[in-house]
Length: 268
Image 1 (cartoon, rainbow, N blue to C red):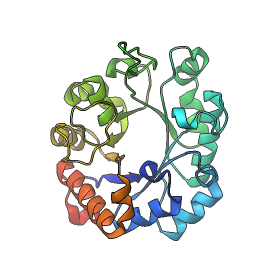
Image 2 (cartoon, rainbow, N blue to C red):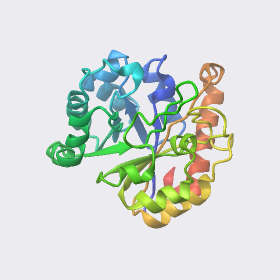
Image 3 (cartoon, rainbow, N blue to C red):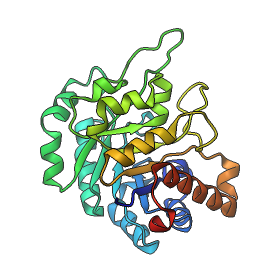
């Protein structure tokens, strides 16, 4: 049985230096960093990221394109341009996976591109392009489905899928049912907990009540080389206490490894 790849996302460090995320990830024992491209110019510069990664001896196997509302102008405003430029960055970093968000319902050209051309473009760069599940956005009394992929069934048209456990919780989707539908297409997971509160929580494992252990147990049985990112919300007080933060993230990584059923010693 292969050792899982457990990464840390730099997303919680978006108001900090990118180097801080790498330093903490290295000290806490992660296998690498999932780079989320943000408004920070350093995250948009492959050479700068590569230098930081090399300094901390951590790879960047996964690059998350700038598809958040806050990054709507990063790497262009056209989702096709964003995806293309993210692929160039990812290839320069030696990544094997690029994550994109599903199109908004009105982004017909992007939706067609994902279904017909994304695999070819990814392969040309030596990587895969995977679509992440999102969730309905509450707007007043209504909760319209702005994205095309909020349920597992919406992802079946894509060859490569990223499942986000917090996003599934917001949508009200059982984790096991999601795996039943797209487990064979899932190449990566964003793992975090959820307590049933409003919105996309990305809580630390154990702060909510998602059945993460059964899901990760299935992942370990069904996938030859599991690939996981802990994408966690970290409060300012947690980020400010470096020693406590490292302990917390190390514990989170070990809990994840324990649930997926891999020996901690082998993954350390």
